[in-house]
Length: 385
Image 1: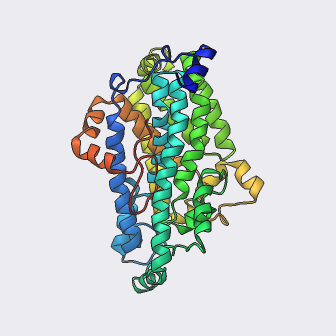
Image 2 (image 1 turned 120 degrees about the vertical axis):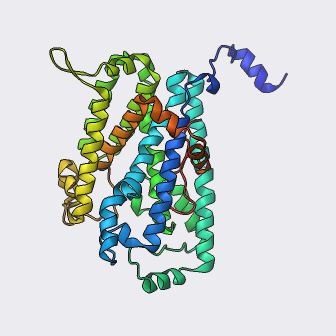
Image 3 (image 1 turned 180 degrees about the horizontal axis):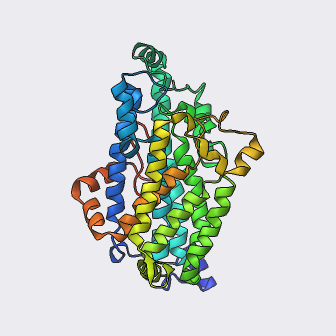
């Protein structure tokens, strides 16, 4: 008998009664993998156009008129940077809580908290380490030359780490920073300056972990109201928490039959008149797209929605005019589109079947798990365990 076995027997602890999570017995979420496959394609479009045809991505770049017209018409649904990033953030919250909601026990909860940091740390360390190593050896002079030759001022030249310890500390800091995600050193070392995304996803994961443990042990009909109240508070405080709560609520909707059945009856307006669930998704998508197209047509006002977050500009003195566009924040237009699309997918068997086709699943599975980086290699995939 080993020492560990002796301690276990002495304490009377037994693992025989701990429930386990059986993936094969759970409802399929393959359609979420297919949805990630679409986002991977859009990520490739974005990084390609950002590098070689910047006028298709940003209004600040010089280019012929037809490119700016294509940007206004096609960029929103096919290669909009903030929409892609925000979609991955909400999808992460939507998926990481599914195992626990399907099997709410201590073992499943512990597995979620232990595995995810390890997987993210390994993936980020390899990807960031390779990027930093390559740039430190090749330098960045050729990037500056490319930018002036094309020309392309939309691409930022990556910084280079002064030493190995600086590179290590920058990667280590990805899992500790809780504010100013885009200003961390590792983000500057990354070619597309989007390494703030996995750092934010990791940090917001604990918002989901804190809330999801409550849901299985409270009345289901209270969940939407309670989570909506939390989302409203985080929206007011300009936190990304309302994105995370949206993903958690969608996961709760898909795993709890009573919530889904109640939502399926629609919203009562007056008498026997009800607002159909499909109409809710349609309204959200149309409203979000309308706002995004408005900002695409008049990009100088794209940050006008900052006035909806009083604590943001009152506490920091930031206004629409002096706001740094490189500083990411949770956008209302992205939120409306994403929640509407995910609601529509959850309610439509046809959409789930289409997203579960083999080509989309292949693309979704090729993306690197647990990350959200819009650069070559393009990454983010499953957050499920």
